[in-house]
Length: 369
Ligand code: UD1
Image 1 (cartoon, rainbow, N blue to C red):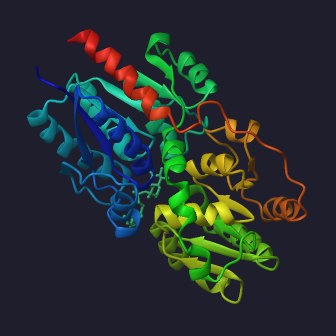
Image 2 (cartoon, rainbow, N blue to C red; image 1 turned 30 degrees about the vertical axis):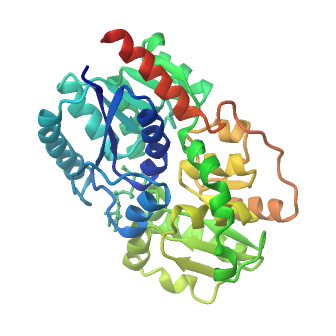
């Protein structure tokens, strides 16, 4: 009997830790032939290859090599290359994850080719359509036949937008599957010693959202807060390539000089997990890091005014502080004075989300054949 062919599509850094447990669990089910497509949206070693190695991902079956470009051009390149490939491959199902341009492009291509789409991490909404990811989430969810969610409010968001209740499955957080699996390996690394850091002796920062780094004034406000924080403890800053580019475009690199802010290359998965777990607190505008810090029990200051992951605020360690220098500095002081909220881990963020997803797909597809 022919196996059910599942194409798993990944393109950018935050996708890789989500597809790793999915591929592993789908492969354990003998009924599936799983194919991994890497769109090439991220291509630097630090943004891509290192994750394949550390997460134990198989080499992609197909690399589309789309690279960086404007949103329209990048999305169009993925669509063009993927359609061509899928015309040959003819998958029975495409699995897409997260909210990057590759996610949107794959869901549009598949829908028009009548290939059903499963969206892992469905239903997250920031209700801020100036964020490119919000557009990607809305379009992908509206086209998906299987909507796998990480939290209860995602279901409410999806139902409000007209999703069929039977298409929504609360399966948990696949990113946390990867974190649980690799936490011990991350702890074994010598990251702190190599960087001459002490446990709890530094704050960890990531920053790359267009709203924070594409506008000079917003970027300067954040840097001011960082300079203040760095008078209290070291700030470790693995910088995304677009952030480095913007720093130099706006002539802001000099502002960091003299401050205890360590601008380093993007870290691999294990070093970054080690850095998060041992930090005093994390400052970020990333989505996934809000979730990871919640599970690690590390305070997280999110440099945004909204989040598509409100459960990390209501249950977890996340606090939205926006982009004003004084608000960021005040929140950091609160943590340094050891008065930060207590938190718990959301339901189904337990390391078994991919197992749940694979077993639902097995049931769905064995019923069909
Ligand atoms: C993308 C995702 C974002 C995610 C982020 C994580 C979209 C809309 N955005 O944003 O949701 O949080 O990834 O990293 O899909 N670049 C390199 N090397 C690379 C990749 C990018 O130098 O390997 C540089 C290029 O100059 C590029 C810029 O970074 O123009 C932005 O990359 P892009 O993939 O367009 O978006 P991200 O900002 O990475």
